[in-house]
Amino acid sequence: MSHPPQPPRTSHLTQGAGLAKDLAERPAALQPTRDPGATLPDLLEVLLNKGVHLNLDLIISVADIPLIGVNLRATIAGIETMLEYGMMRQWDEQTRAWVQKSLTKHLPMADGEEIVSAMAASYLHDDFYQAWRPGRAYLTNRRLILHRRDPAETLWQSTLADISGVEPVQETSVGGETRTRLKLKMRDGSEEMISAADPQALLKLLRTELNSEGQSLGGGANGSAGPAQQQVGPLFSGSLWVLETLAQGSTWRGGRGTLEEAGDFTWKSPMDSRPLLRCGPSEIVTVERETLNNPTDHDEVLRVETSRATYRLASPELSKWQQHLTEWAHATKEAPHGAAG
Amino acid sequence: MSNTAAQEAETLYVYGIVPAGSPEPAVAGIDGAELQTVTAPSGLAAVVHIHRSGPYEGPDEDVKRWVLAHSDVIDDCWTRAGAVLPVSFNVIVRPSERTGSPAIDQLTEWLDSSAGELSQRLDELAGTSELRVEITLDQHAQAAEHAAVRELRAEMESRPAGVRRLLEKRLDKLERQITDQAADELFPVSRARIAAHCLQIQGYAPSSRTKGAISVLSVACLVDELQITALGAELAEIRDEVPAADIRFLGPWPPYSFVDLTAPGPEQDGDQQQGQQPTA
Image 1 (tube, chains in turn orange, purple):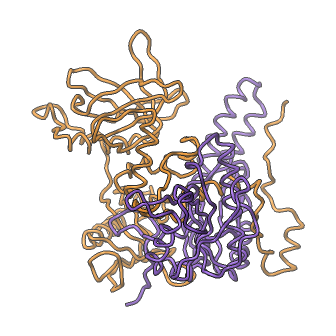
Image 2: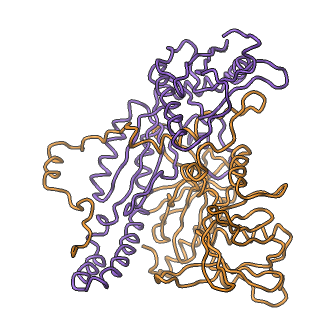
Image 3: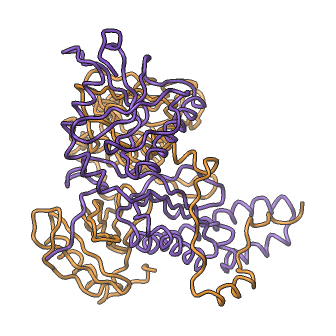
């Protein structure tokens, strides 16, 4: 075969399509499909995860066992993503119990030990030979575990108390991509290397857990360079509500806003895979306060007008957001940079 | 159903909640189980079957069959009764361990004690459907006209097969990068356009991934039945504007994703917040 693979569909409209468009102002409406062949995975997802879960210990026994293989159910539920976000603690107790139970079926937990996050990860085995061993990283409030489910094997684990610090390390992979690995510094002076699906998220969560374990990250605080110089953090970030307009009225969505010093202002919901809002500093037209019902204690929200759209943002830290957004937009107007697209 | 000693150990498998007096379901339940309606004084009814074993558990293939049967019942209720609160798979009412009161009494009590909330949600969902929209971009189609891609393709033509295989990997990566950027731009716009036709909208993780397809958006939409065509027309426009877009449009279904009776609190990240009207 000497041809490059044929694209599965043409990238150009056929001439006929132009004609059809001329005949009718609007294209014919897309018809939804109910064909079970096409919709089965979706049906499974909703029926296993949605619907009335009667909330009553007294009367109803909701089966809390995973009925469909954990893998299938976890994937369809988007639970994987939520776990990567470390959102365990924000779920209701029932969901938490279910996930905990599913995960711990093959990974025994101590009393009071709770999963904080789980994601695909690899452990750099460096003993007689060096090799990345794939599995999943489970961060609990007590341990960090690299575990492979099938065949079951704990590739590596440590109590948080034995980890003195964690640092991101940039490495170039075989394919030429830059990857962030996490280097763990152990109390006994040794080091371990892991990779993870979302290294930044795991880094952050791990640091949080290490801190709450009562660890001062500078176990070597009196000298060694802190992790600060390695990290290029955002200028400002925090939880932020964004108002979304619906057919009737509108609704506030919870999520996270991030303001990058030499980049964009973005807002992303944990339910979405991409930011719903993204704009460069030069796109900001105005940032003003406005009185509007919102989920915070403030009476006011921010009305952010960009060259493309107008957004309404609510936050418990409204003044800070206003200040940072205004300064950020202003600063880059004075000294424009070419990064934003 | 009478309340005899023999029935005390019986549990009730629940499919959905409908307004009392709704037409009886015309289909059978899971594995052909005979369906019954338990009506509570509050004007609500639950569609159930008498269940004598534990929760359904087994190989994925069995679970798929059960889940589909469960969904058929809800669908039937929805078509006939016009409104239904779908109940999750494997919700089983058992007799009270404390008082020994049979499952049917437990269920009736629950229907009555939750009547306010349940009736309100049934009213709100009457005349609505759930539709799902998944938009993906075909990476070949999206990136085909990109200068860097054309250059690389041209280069590939003149190279021996071995080098070409390496370049194909680079081409794939390049196409994915270009398409991912396009998806980032398309997401906010398409979500806003879809949301404008929805009573509620909720993102979810896409169920399957096709090679070469980059996901832009996956949303469950609660739509007034009369607005389904308008949503379909909007999608057709998006499809025509973005030739590389592939749109899956599923439904109409009973409002499975929108029966949540308790919305998360404001501190919690996530959707499904109680709608707030932007009143000054």
